[in-house]
Amino acid sequence: MDSLFKSLWSFLLPSTAPKPDTEEFLLLASLVHADVIEFDIPSPRSIQIRAIWSSSPLETGWRLDIPSAPNTRIEVGIFEEASGEDKDEMALNGVRVVLGEDKELIPTLFTFPHRHHILSSTGIQSVLDPSFGSHPVLKTLLPKSTLQAPVNDTLDHETCHLHALYTLSKDVFVDQYQLSQLAQFKSGGIKNVRGIWGETDLENPSYTTKGWGSVILVDIPKSEEGNEIHEMKVELPMHLRYLEPREGGGNQIVEILPPEIFWACENTVEGPTIPT
Image (spheres, helix red, strand yellow):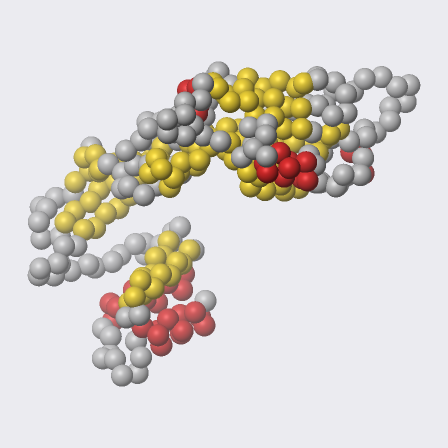
């Protein structure tokens, strides 16, 4: 971090620049202790630095003197994480003040949605067809209500896409080439395969597979304008690995979890500000 600080200092304050005052120096020096630092260069002559501290960089706690300036709006706020009204909503609760305008701190609650809107499992049915054998297909029926993009004032609805996330144990696997072919022909309710992570070896039996399993993320086609879809069936073909032999034989149950169905949207609109 010391080298990062020196690089920032030489970049932001070259030798030809006026000597900074103590406050500017301390503000920049505090970046050394930041937990997260992000940089953005909006133009050749400017740089934006965003820093997050999980705790105060000073033993005496937080202290920052921010003076007001003429013809400049300076708003200061102190917030902590809060709970939103909806399970897919985030919130920040605290106080804010506009320097030179407000005479006291204003209690404020900011709310905004997650980019991922997870759908309730109510009404979504998943079944194995067949419920036995080495090559079952996990079929998930999505009713019309799940195929409508989430309604929220802070979401850009044009960017919303519907996805299914599967988490499979190491006892089963998917054939990535088979899934790619389904996506190519838009078959089985799979529009695109976003990724397959984890154990995808087609030959290993379950008892020699060291990993825990695999995760599959696929895109689901959404209703196009003027082409209403009443329901959608998403089919994920799976293959059972050879299980460890049991002395004396017998049946063995393999648990298959239903997928998580969710919308992913860009959060491009600022959420509401609610005085509390």
